[in-house]
Length: 460
Figure 1 (spheres, helix red, strand yellow):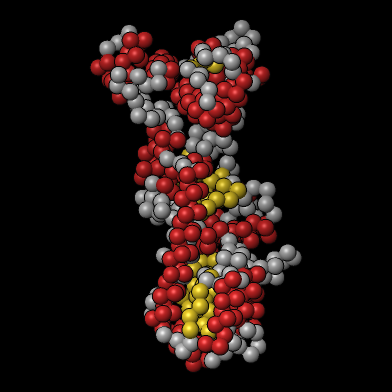
Figure 2 (figure 1 turned 60 degrees about the horizontal axis):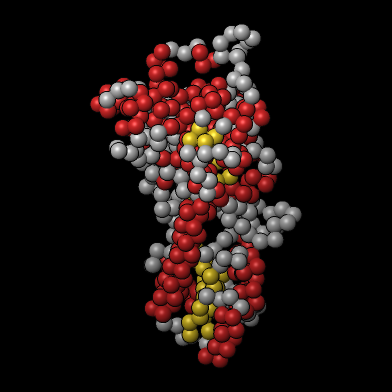
């Protein structure tokens, strides 16, 4: 884990060195500055967690430094060192946002205790923010729904790669659930307690993307009025997820390669490298090998990213998952909107299964959300679906069977079994009655077709 970064400021060089050495023995990363102006210049170049500063300095006093530091980095914690005659100024600084003050002549134990408290407060604040975000964006394995053999392979891959430190590349069309898989890998990894930060690389200008990823120093470009941490620093001890990675430009590709090789970044406009400790998960809907062949993506970066690959198949290639997904979203949006909708009519399901779903799972989710919002019935009817789904089931050509008619008997059996289980809420007793088999036969069928409940199933 990256240690907190501290800056010690004092115009007395000897005092500055004594304090810095005491803090270094505590395991902190410490820089020093002899005077307020030098400290402010350094703080505009690098981001510090805590600044320990004398108040009375000839070139720039501690109060002016405090204001300058908070302008450069609003999150910085400032501890002031003050002689008896400047206690009143120290109290004014506390009102202006300083974290604490300690009296001179210094008692190092008192100073170290104040620094430890500041570090702990920052940790608790960040942890609280992280948990609040986690409550809003909870991604667990049960949020990835599917009974098809191809999704079973995805589940196995997630279970295999999550506990490792390896970089993960997630591929698949838009809407297949790549970000949910990334969240799931993170939440099942040793870094689960750490931050999960994400950025969509598509559509961002390269200079803006670099600033978002690596941070910048003050004055690095027009509008950079303060130093700013990038996502890689924010994601320290956790996971950084880069969505639509195939869209990044050549300069960002080169910098990203440095991150993967050295675990360090250099903020835009900065001269010093910053060590980081992150796991990278990337996703793309592009064929990166084709991008490499055509010169748009670095080959060395591709190999660095392609350590562990998880491919998500499009929904049209795993149609047996459509009923399970549809009922999953029905429960989700029914509960969210307080709607007591008990199921999906067979005609409605036929239309869902016959559609090609170019937008994949995301499009299906949106369709069910819309249907729940407009439905006035206890079950979803065809008229509740969006217009392009509500009409008759289309055939591939006039008078010829649609795509669902051209599947094997085994696939048809698997689909029907999954539909019955989803329609009964995975009540195995009821499903066995509908299928006309005993429960022991049902269990053998579930095992044969590799079907398992997306949530805990009912045995009643």
